[in-house]
Length: 140
Image (cartoon, rainbow, N blue to C red; front, top):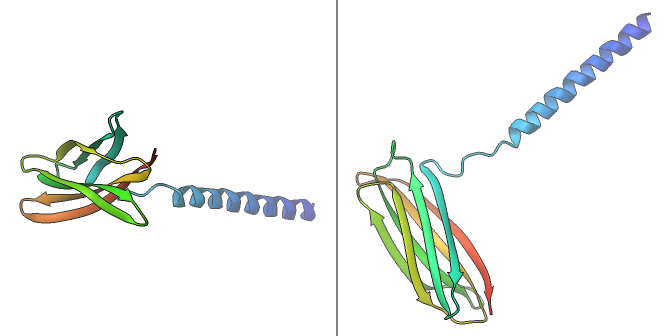
């Protein structure tokens, strides 16, 4: 009888330990916020049949914290290293949302990406700067 009770206790301890480990693992794998103030930052490149790249960036940050934004979008081409071939900077002094849509003629047989640097402000105080890359891949 004593042996059965010991086995039950060991089984219970092992079960509780496993549940605790699983819970801690699940907690550890919970995605953490990437940014403090930005709620969205997305971008992409679409290339039209006439070798015209349409570069689109959409971003937003929390209006409870920031009141204006500034975004720089760089179209980059890979030729032994990434080089910026065209850059645009826009800002929204009266809000936290910004949509940039620009066009630029590109050459075939290169890889392209967008480098987006977004800055959130409260008045003139810089709250946060984030940089993200959006790859198009190889254009042929």
